[in-house]
Image 1 (cartoon, rainbow, N blue to C red):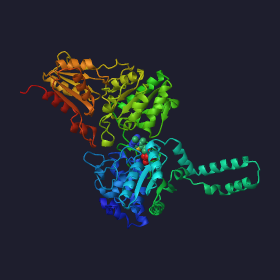
Image 2 (cartoon, rainbow, N blue to C red):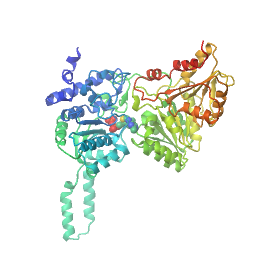
Image 3 (spheres, rainbow, N blue to C red):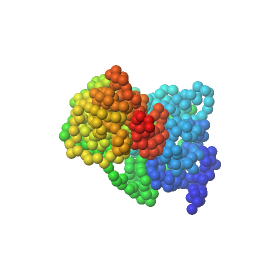
Image 4 (cartoon, helix red, strand yellow):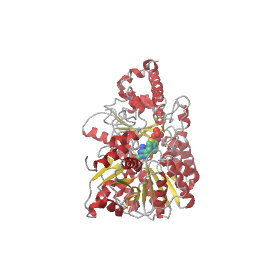
Length: 633
Ligand SMILES: Cc1ncc(C[n+]2csc(CCOP(=O)(O)OP(=O)(O)O)c2C)c(N)n1
């Protein structure tokens, strides 16, 4: 069957302008086709499925009513932007999504004028949109700015900062709250309960009950008081607006609206278009809508690998356990031995592996919502009371909590452990998600111990070591499968600030290859290859980026003909920098050095293997670096 026959309405849509002439029935047909197209395209490759399926009707209605790109449509997080991409001229390119050279999985300003703001981290849309609204007003221009934010993303402080300022500035701004009661996992927190009480009407009933109780408690005073009581009783419903919280913040509240009813959505947006002040449109959607397996298991289908489009089954990944799984199991073992160990996630229980910890130790587990800054300071508070908090967070998202790491943890010498998952190149999620900077931004913090284990067994030891310290520590490890090495029965506490030689002779090293983290495997391959040809090379696993094993570095540098440093972190300020600083500080003559790591540019998306090859972090690149330090033929 030709593509045209399959998607007859969608095939006619090359941009939002093509939606303007469609009938209500055609808009509904278009939504069905967009959904089918997403399912067909993603089933062999995977991607952010459930959130995108949930906003199909919402996206159709937004592009029907608003005029992107003149009107700015800003998607929060952006993982739900697939229907937006399909309807804004990228239908044909959609099958390339998340693949090297293809469409990004997130809105990206350089990709399309319809992507008003680049994104990947959550809760930025209201601040960015308000800035655009303020910029528009300064320029005396006319256009709408529409921010679409999920109830999960609304839990972050940044979103509240934006709302607070928006009410104050009182500009023409539309915030669409896409409420599906889910973050990646079920949403948490008071705001989430508030929203569900709006939906059930429970808020009003409770308010009335409380008011009635209050009125009954007033003595029969008669006169003015009695008249007031009567009026309150009569008008209590009038007092009440379901979106009272948002009204108090200076927004006009519209909703709740069925987010799968295009007719209702279009009418609501047509009305809202006429407003000239902050409006919050509360839209209720179902995550995974239209694909039963995703509706039933929205967390599993949030970000998904290849799946069967008929029944949603997925093939289990074989091979060695992932670093996340080893962290997950080790932490549970260590927590069994030490009842002071507690664990914290910022809305990522599955992604970090803490879901099992939560099941095993429900009282010692905290999901704080998408609130990395709060997670860090909350952990500091727990540590101040003698607990041993482990904050499990993706490297890229800890960027949000940097000041808290410095001011609330390190400066106060509190023993908080940061388990940094997804350190290094993450692959298809691309530059918003690569954990490219943690070694640089953590290495400069006084008192903080930074461990970069080189395989999954080392990860076990690193975690045990971090938990045994009396100050703060970070342990970084990558996305994906481990090396398949044997796992020690008991995690060991490692000597502080000491690395280890894993191949070659440190007294006669030839070329010394110094590694931080799981790049060791590629380096080992390279060292094995050149050694097999009789070239002398020595391989050093630093284990710690801070404190650095200065003795070992100086000793190797004194005897080596050249040094290669390898890390999956930005070269600027990373492990290689630490090695050079150390040698400069020691006043040593430095042999020729090649530093391998992430370049001073944002690395795009692709598979991890493709990206490592591109940036020069595979075995071939290490081998070339070693050879470049040998005397010429
Ligand atoms: C700062 C930050 N922390 C964590 C994440 C990981 N993350 C991606 S989507 C998501 C849930 C978002 O929930 P919501 O906004 O309600 O959107 P939904 O997926 O439910 O449509 C999370 C936690 C992120 N993108 N950014």
